Amino acid sequence: MLLSTPEQIENYTTSGLWGEDRLDLVFARHAEQRADDLALIDDQSLHSVSGRRPQCLSFIRTWRRVVAVSEFLTGIGMKSDTVVAMLIPPSSDAAVLALVASRMGIILAPIPLTSGEADLREKLEQVGAKAIVCCSHYEDEPVAERVRNVAADMFSIRFVFCIGENAPEGLIDLGEILDQEDNVDEESLFQHSRQIGANVVLAIHWSAAGSDVAQPIGRSHNQLLAIGRYVHEQTVLQAENCLFVTHHMSGLVGFAVGLVGALDIGARIQFHNFRTTHGFVEALAEFGGQHVSLPGSLWQGAHDLLPMNVREQLISVSLVWNRAHAEQSVYGENETAARLIDLTNFKDLVLFSQLRRHPSEVGSIPLGSINSLIDPAKVWMETFLFGMEEARKAQPDAAIIGGELCVRGAMLPECAFPLAGAIEGKALRATEDGFIHTEIGCHLVTEEHGEQRALFRPLGDLGDVLSFGGFAERGEDLDSLYRECIVVSDAAAFIVPSEDEGPAHLMAALVVDDKDIAREEFYAFLKNKRVSRMKWPRDIIFVEAIPRRTNGKVMRESLIEASQVADVA
Image (tube, rainbow, N blue to C red; front, side, top):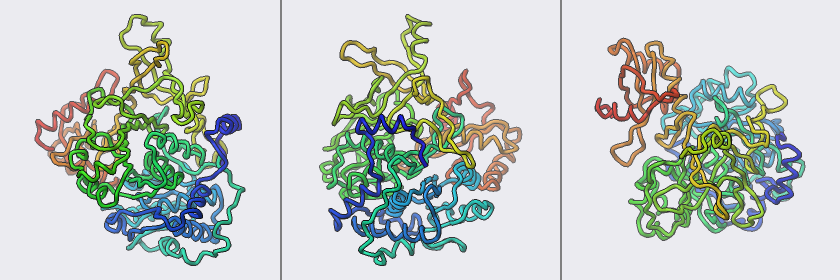
């Protein structure tokens, strides 16, 4: 499926940002040239996490699996442009499936592993998925069981594959096919089809940028490769390096930066399923991780635990920030050999990466062109503040001038993925000049002056992002879910930090009439609705009213204070 316009293809190909190679063709060259080098190593605890025995694969073994699975799927009638949903944790299997999709022209749709049945059905219907690949379970989440239940009621789903032990009956065991790498014909191992180009859609991710609800965004090989190359210009990831991949495939950080970026460069990928900071640091020490990414809020805890050998081996540490840069100072220590990089994720629509310039501050973002560090003539993306000029004219003496962040460039499409049954995707809301709206408010930090570029700081807007247990959910989505309970008249989700090194806890504030029955009724509602356990609050507090700002946004920091007074955290 081709979503890029002829103008986009011509402009970005001429500039050198896009090329003709698919992801699988790039990786196949690595497999030919470095056949026996290690390519993919699974987390040693993968079996307890998802029921799959951990794998350790060289480049050639990885490629053999890609060919074996491709031949199997072709044999059962799967064709190009088929949308295949993927619920697989960070692992070698996820990498193989991405390469299979690239080789066959399949469109991969990674979905969060903690999705409940209602969320799963909605996403499958949105993109018209015809097949699903899932793990048997993820921690305590019955992933395969949910997938089977949903697929049983959807006549559009033709195939349901499972990887891992103790899978429910009725699902096709794809693990056996993955392990049949030795059955591949040597003569056809590196025979490639050129009919599928690099501008067709490879993967779908969901983004709420410029919309009240998350939309499926399809990206081509070139767009995903551009994201990885843009970020790794700054990490300086090399083929001989080891990249730690901890983020899940349902987001751009895990899929485009981690998976696609490393497969493109030919770096060794060490997968890790984050549970605790201690476990993360121990894995870094054991497997020699040199490039890592983790949520910015976890850097202080991780930094304090790093042993000397890890501090010396690290080359880059990418700290991920969601939507907004913290106004207060951030942890600024970096007693390692690594360069510290701040990676701001704008709702999985686009990423902005920059070297940390001031120890205790996430740097502001340039207004205008974001150029390549290697070839400044290449422009990865452009930023624009919508409404800034109007605000300046209306309030010429205002101390703070800003607007809504809008972006365009080689890393993002101009339209959403076509909804099931549609021929074309809905155009993303954009300015007359093609800048995509994000609904993220920003303010200017410095004006343009001579060679000094104008800089701005994103403040965030459109619903908070709540990060807990390695996952992130829109606060507004959880608020709406909790308000569906019949005994709840108003509700808000919020996060309280853990007292130890563990992840933060999800909490809920409820406005109810009868507190005596509300707690039991609320949790019974979540159970009956089959809501993912990840979305169940650890505890709840009862309040007379949900505190809101004048624009209606929940004041979640006030709820944190209320929970401390109630002593429930």
